[in-house]
Image (cartoon, rainbow, N blue to C red):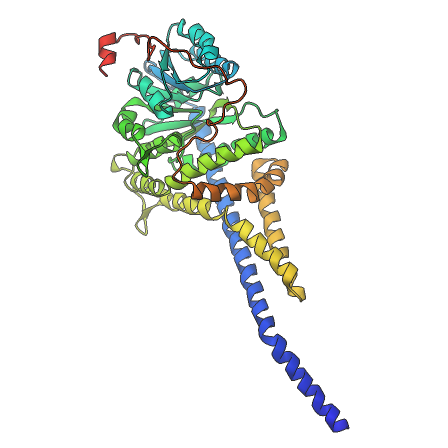
Length: 482
């Protein structure tokens, strides 16, 4: 009896070991792989964040020296250059457009040079509600209002004004954007101090930040975006997307690339958005620098609902994915050859700045997609596991996320921003990116398709389809043939 019992125990032990051994080892391997992937993601994300922050700090120091030169001879000299300001408008709220135009008129008090504002109505359906604003400002000197009989797209609207202007510098402004009184003066001064720059972006915040928690969060996101991401790119003199709400360009640079910009297509269809990204990349392809200037401030209207914000992000992500390959090509041309071939610093065949910018390009593609996958895998392991190891991936993931939130909070100087933006980033923006990829060929604007209640006034027929006054110094016949 004892012998039988003795023989039974090893047999039972062997049977249990054989049954649970392989499955247990597989789970251990899965846990180790998940933990390793999470640690790798944390190292990549934290390294990218700290590297970006370090370049932003360097840019800030360099910019302070440029903005406040100690020597009087280092300040701007010469005759002020003429500036053309192009403002395309489509179904804008009259009070918002009025604020935009009023802010543009104030620019003359701080800039001694000539400023000509080109206000282009791109076939608005509520033209009757906008006409009082148009008539008020086109009566002022230095203003021209152009009216398209039908909607042709933002780039066509900009083209109507660009072909008529003569200013050496061109400022693009969105119709829902309000500029600080010294914005254009600071952008022009920045151009004068950086002769190799073909484009310079201003600093944009949310004008309606106090409307809701969402708009306040978007405002914080914009602040972090410009103060750190754009600043880090500007230290390498290659801002890949000069802001659509306000940016300045040299007319000779735009002349070289304008046709490619206006006639740009994707899968055989005319592009209607992503204009700021496209124009910035074309500037970089011509080996000119693109910079960011913190004191050229502006405020724009941001979406106040999650639906509107999601549509905006879908449109922006479509543009980013569409131009991904061209962004890499533009960075190669700009940073490999430099301006007139004078800025080449090879390292394993690549220039110094190229390493960070290409790393940033890859990080911006991979990093947003990894957290939901890793978090979902960690949660699944915790729910389906049978041993104590099942909690390890989730604990590691939580630790990594806390470290990243701490780093971003310190860099942004705000603890509310990372705590509130992280859930939005993890949940909604994942579906936004997936939708952007699935609808990559759809070129509809998204936020323009549905009119709000105040956008119900029908467009009145116009006797003059263009409705533009002659620009000073150019006869009508000459402008009509341009």
